[in-house]
Image (cartoon, rainbow, N blue to C red; front, side):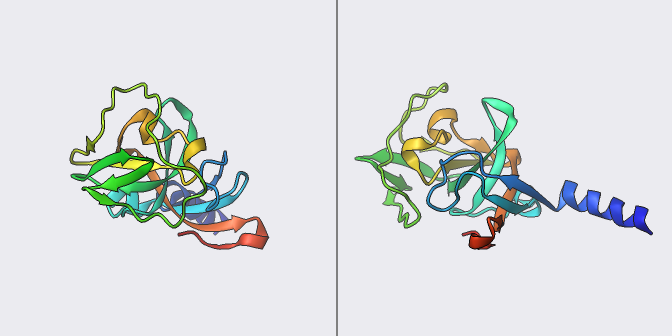
Length: 165
């Protein structure tokens, strides 16, 4: 009985949900360094991720690190950065979750020129604290298959337990 429960828990952790610690201040004010969150893994595997979702993925520059960022644009969309603002498909993106600071291109190890058109199966991710976030402006679009989980719930600290949006 105990063995079956442990096996079920291990399978759920491997395929259904995971827990993650926020490693930096790149998602302020939404998530703080040291916050702990749950992420469900099914949405990212079946392509049910939406713009505005917060997702986890392996850092393209360091596969040992898991990053947490917000999905800004989806496959087939175009991202542009103009005058410190983000445009998706030519429309100014409404971003009430942003902390202070504008959005500018960053030095990239990929050759990026704006606007950036996303291919099928690609997403564009950015941190909410743009001046302190290395995101798609640095490493370019991610493949949807690179996403690990969609963050749904903060469980630590107890003073901020609740749904993450």
